[in-house]
Length: 257
Image (cartoon, rainbow, N blue to C red):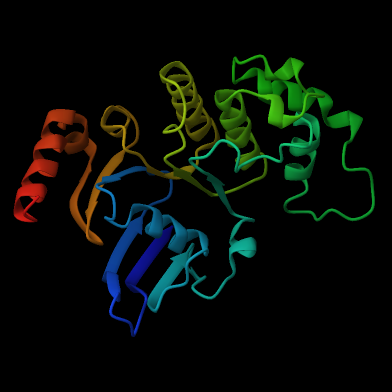
């Protein structure tokens, strides 16, 4: 479904601060996989997401999606088939618009906005049904501005919005990191439910090692732009947080930290 072929990404090219984070890096993700990505700060996790979404162009290599080369496809075009939820709950919704208005705008992502009314009454029940799945009372807050919601409610709404249209790939950029423990658990449970029900392919970066081991079908550890661990199937099911921490420690010692 998604292939990164010999991708190279260089920051500050031609300066004393030049950094080649990915060097001929390749990765293949099959349809229906739920990939969890872990790694230390600076390992390339968020950069990898930015490359996939089109926010950060590559210096060389190709990005193939469903057999089509999207290397030069801009971010807003990729958003038609890629949904993304960011770490900051404030990023995925517009604070000055109501929950209803945010959902109505998201509904128009593939069809365009035009000059017709953005909020259609016929969609109200559908929106309420979607929000009920969050179990956070959002179905009763349709006319509340998003800026008034809690972080957990806002992130749950951002997740719903990212998956409202027929996306094929869901990108999760540490989307539970800024939440309190209870909200983090609820949003993660909701994430897993949506991925399963919609049969989505998902790519999740997380610092929560328990989430990385308990959820998903594949686990990748990045270090300095390389995959130093790539487990799926029984291997992933058997891996524990202690084993992942041990790998982190080995890398840290090798790097002199």
